[in-house]
Length: 151
Image (cartoon, rainbow, N blue to C red):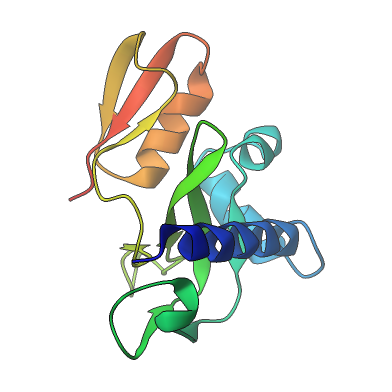
């Protein structure tokens, strides 16, 4: 994998999706995030975004060593940023809980370990999903960190 190419593509995708969330016709994703317990200031601070339409991307163009393409689905975009660098991109579906359960997809090339929100030198709370972790972290990001163990 070419990490430099991946980081450039990931950063561009994160910025584009963040701008899309705050653009026109964004009522559905913002309502989804609000109903999940996130406020607008925190949504912006965490650089969350919205990928309105799913699309295939060539692996080679993202610096991945495999052939073919991969799908970036529609949904809420969570760029995992460590020390001001994107190390992972996750897309959270906005499925209807009555018909389609919410899911989290990791974009190929992303960091695969546990996700930690906040510095590691504080009290740590645990979460089993990105949305749960974001909600916990929003409560008091200056007091504790959140360790997200993806299932």
